Length: 207
Image 1 (tube, rainbow, N blue to C red):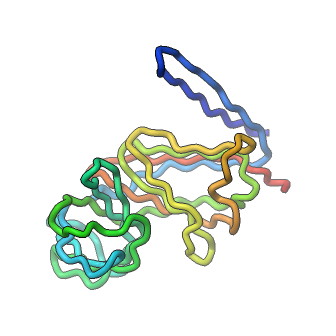
Image 2 (cartoon, one colour):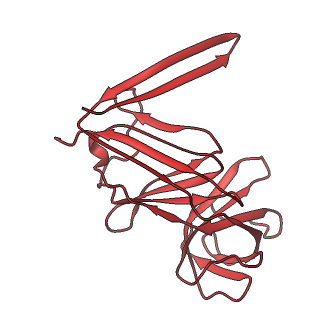
């Protein structure tokens, strides 16, 4: 049966700490995608916490009804993401959008440079309740939205550049994907260049 391994190495408090977590299960999945490069710009209209207008650089490539993820860094240096926004009718560089989830849009429209881009669909489906182990990472800043067959977002994860996101069963941490089965995953890129996103998991396919 397939085996998954997550290795962790820490250097902290003057100590080197190493650990390896291994699980074996009947089902597995693994995908690698390269979402479209993000485009830079500003939030020039803030209609609400979840809607507004972006003014982006030329040749941004966003079209009406595209799903986009919007990224910025707040005043405290934290990475923010308003994900799953739906683009309206495009007016050259101006991209109106609605239905953004996640971090509410910044209150001062000109304070933060943003990046935004069209999401890429990752073709994976599994029952989160049967997960044994899952891990994901991107080479640059990105975002994952785990969606069910009705397009509801079950879980949303911001991927900091080159940092691993992972969960393993029986480690005292609540399963982030319990509930409805995952039908697909949307990957957003917060970087104005190439970002390789990988996701893999093990699950009890006999469950």
